[in-house]
Length: 276
Image (tube, rainbow, N blue to C red; front, side):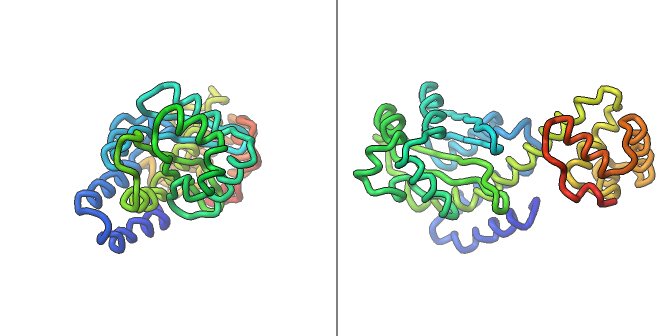
């Protein structure tokens, strides 16, 4: 597995076997493996095969993915009605007190939950969530889960079925809770890759290989780790770095990381850049 969080979540499968079918466990393992593969971007729903695996496992009519970086929210969905995407985006940006209360209650929970478990029914019926999504699109209560990376929340994934179908229940809640660390890891890796690519794109004087070295440096890899990742000698990495220092007017890894980060308007990079 990619890291401790994913390994820990996968280990929980042993305790969930009483609730899940053997086919559920196999499908969940397949999805966890698929999420380790390089993605085209942070929007996991853009990956057709991954999207179909999620739909098959949860047997849902709608999947919504909201991603945010502190300054903006990207909303993506796949489902029966394209208008649902606009409604989902509007609700994600809702400032109504009840919707904010519901979101705050969800943030306090670890793992998946049904929105109906977050507010009394009479209050739920007054939310934008109910009046812009559930009622007009005739879908059941959304099941949702925040995607966490340590203490940071990266976004939210929501799933739902048409109102004529069997209600989502303990099986689906368990599956989504077990899958959440893998989804979070995949989103975090894709975001890091996108930011690194944006940073190096500002410097056309760098060769493709030098761009790869810079992107891995921004992810916090040491010179030895970069060498292993790119299948080259340690001293070849050092040679690339010295050439990059000269081209960008920097003298060490920290200055280089700062220069790259500033090129995309980001904050000063973590102290990881000092590692060699």
